[in-house]
Structures are given as C-alpha cells and as structure tokens.
Image (cartoon, rainbow, N blue to C red; front, side, top):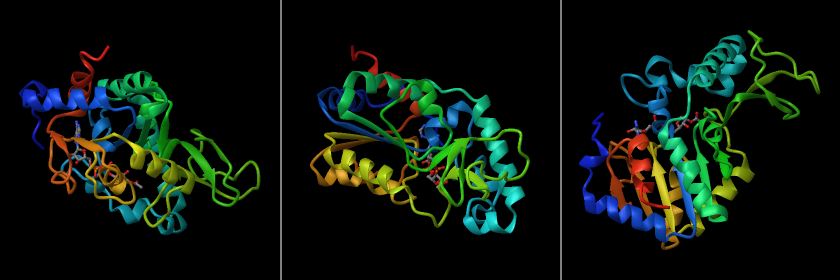
Amino acid sequence: MSEPDPVALNPSDLARARELIRAAERVAVLTGAGISAESGIPTFREAQTGHWARFRPEDLASPAAYRRDPEMVWQWYAGRARDVQAAAPNPGHTALAELERRKGEGFLLATQNVDGLHARAGSERLIELHGNLAQARCERCAHVQPWPGEATAPPPCPVCGATLRPNVVWFGEYLPSAALEASQLAFAQADLALVIGTSSLVEPAASLPLLTLRGGGAVTEINPDQTPISALVTLRLAGRASQVLPALLEDYV
Ligand code: OAD
C-alpha cells in the first residue's frame, strides 16, 4: 500500500475538499477498516496484515461457523474484543467527532467497523452498520449486553437461556434494517459524502455514497489506494485518514 503524506496531496484538491466540507449543510460519512489501521487494528483485505489473510472468513465469521465450532468463533471474537479495547482512537476518528460538532443535526457517520473507536473518539450521530465487538447478543431473543469478558465459551442468555453470540453482522446475514434505512436516507439527502478507508467491496454499505451522487451531492474519497468507486467520486484524496482528516479541518473554525 502506498503511504503518501497529506502535504504531498495536490493543494487544489485539498482546497476543494475543504470548500465542499464547509459548504455542505448535510454531510454523510462512511468509514471502513482503513480509518482504524493507524490505531493498530488490522484491516480485512490488505494482503500482508488483514484478518482474512490469516483466517478464512467462512471459518469464523458466519452463522455456519458458529454452529460448527461455537467455542473457536467465540474465542476469536474475544481476542479481537481485547485488541480493540487496548487500542485508542487516532486523529482521524477525532476529526470526525469534531466535524459532527460543527455540522450538528446535518451530520451522520455510518461505520462498517465493529471496533467502537468512533464512539470512544466522541462521535454520537453514529450508526454501527456491522455491530460492535464490545457486545454480545442472544441468538433467540435478541437481548444485547456488554461482552462477557470472562467467558471462554458462549454463555447462556440471562433473559431466555439460549446462547449468546457476538453482536456483529456475519457473512450471509442482513444488516439491521433500521440502521441501514437511516443510513440510506442520510446519504440520499447529503450535499456531501465522505468515504474513508473502505475497499467499497461489501454491500450494502458500498452503495451508500452512490445514493449521494444520485441525489446531486458530491462524494470525496479518502484512501491511499484505488477502489471500485474511485472512478465515480467527485474528488479523491490519496492519503491516510489520520493525516488527511485533520488537515481538512485545519482552518475550519
Ligand atoms: P477492507 O480491509 O476491505 O478495506 C480497507 C481499506 O482501507 C482499503 O481500501 C485500504 O486501501 C484502506 N486503507 C488502509 N489504510 C488506510 C488509512 N490509513 N487511511 C485510509 N484508508 C486506508 O475493509 P472494509 O472496507 O472496512 O464486514 O471492509 C468492509 C467489510 O468487509 C468489513 O466491515 C467486514 C468485512 O467483511 C463484516 O464483518 C460484516
């Protein structure tokens, strides 16, 4: 992966991106694993470091895997939950919380990340499309509770006695419909969408920025690498989120 410094970004692109942010009344943001890369959380698809390079996704992140070997899946998620707890938000997360404070009700952040780092950075107008590693959910009654850190195997639900599972969306599962619909509305109505640190390969999240384009809004992509939506966006900033996002807000008081 290339790692350009933001100062190496074309100054006129940076100026235009700042202007788009300043002018927009409604801003919708989509983030993916790339925004947490510099907090030390591995991304999914990068060849050397990604989670899926070491594990086959269908062995761990699917309902079938959980039925086959619940203890192994539980322990893998327990490890990831510990890793994210030990990590800290980086300046990219913080900049988005800052942008929310400036835009107020016109702002929504939809993340595909399950690491909870946006909330820890102070984001509140936040939708966690793929769930949250810090929570467990009952398979049967949908009771949600904090992750029981002491359990080494899936414990029973305290409400109905069925089995708890990680509160994340697995391969082959639908996203929670209320979360998806609220995100779709925000992106369709946005003057500006920011697409940050996502490979834009996983639906339905990948299509959210297309709703903004369809509605006449602009889309700025922040990613060191090209993605399937790169050719469609209004503006591309090829840099790291933790550097580009603070630079975008630098003179926005
Ligand atoms: P990916 O791992 O697919 O993509 C990460 C993206 O971040 C890549 O396009 C990188 O180029 C980019 N990137 C890496 N470092 C970056 C940095 N410092 N700043 C900005 N961008 C950077 O992760 P996602 O797109 O989030 O779903 O993956 C989407 C979904 O696929 C995940 O939520 C997960 C997985 O299946 C579920 O678990 C349901």
